[in-house]
Image (cartoon, rainbow over all chains, first blue to last red; front, side):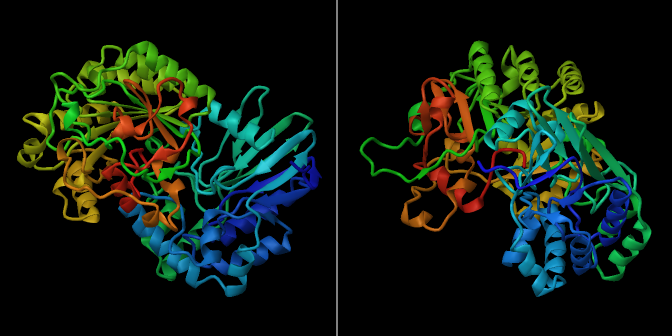
Length: 266
Length: 294
């Protein structure tokens, strides 16, 4: 196992962007005020939102280190679907609309760039060995929900990938598990849509080595109403705009475990 | 009953195999094939008399849960038969919830107010999700009970109501035995549950299999040639193991069948390729189905 190439003491980490360029811009601006040495993104740049291509220059101009998610893999390879792994026909209906729209509105050069992104990123944060992935280290589309990811599995994943800290996204809801001497696992949340709690802000994560690991979840407010109007204007489903406007998920619900589903409205 | 189930005859040409990838799901065949119902399409021919696969002793279940935790299991499922027939069902579910997210597959008819209270208490005290799956094959009582037996429809829906009233979100599981298409089936059940006051309906659809009481419908088997280019790691037997009477098996619906047995001892000893020998393997290959929740 090679040593990580980069070393930092304080970083910002973004989860799925889902074509939400205004939220990404707000998060980058916020992170710049918090003395971070670097910014990272764990993939899923497209989906749900109206202007997929607007995300790419924001990431490049800010020097965000990006790894790929399942959405990025599918868009880059021109696959038939987003690879989220839904089994429910209603979820697949909306996922299909989102995916086809995103593919058709992502420029060829951006699709090609998605194909160059690494699956994982490693770095050292102070004394901590970090591994960043999208779903899990073993599967890009594995959902690591807080209520269905047991400590025993997390210890095994950390051990298997020789890391002290594992960062993931993909589910859309943030969480942090301190394994008390055996490491940490952090789902960094997402920028693309609110996290099904009736609030319109989105979230990213700050990690610091002090030297103990410090994890801070940062709420990001942005012009969500304008984003919702743009979703409607381009003809994407009203359900996508409703989620942005209300903070309640309206689609892609069936994979939610009962604990997380019970906190939502639908 | 056991001799009526399709078991690969000795001496048959070797079947293709699926590799073992990881222990994502541990299935516990808690009551074997002991059930208070006797459905016409039952995958393992469960019923109320002389179960061909016996219930598990609590010590066996506890040992499996402990080993699975050590091996990094992701989720645990209790099935049967009807799991709530087991005298130790609730304490064993509690033990499982201390280790991982836990799902119970039930016909619902034994989920009384007392049981529902206990489940809600367990769910509230656990850091992990508790899922209860309730089987229902048709929104029409007559059609459903023609498959599942008299009183099954009412019992299932009473369980759904009891669990919903306590803040649990049961998953209604239906086979396509009476279906006219997946989307229509899903929409039908969704609307039905909404109309019955279930605010957040959850529905899982399962195909039927040439197995158990529906055995004999197909003699088709998977072959190496037929699997060329297919990603075998998409099959659930690459990420699941089942503890049932007699050992550890590769597949929840083949538990108890000699051809699916991978170990007579530990879970870890079952971490080896699974034989895709059974006609049911054809259905998994064709539909991409999983017995797990999502």
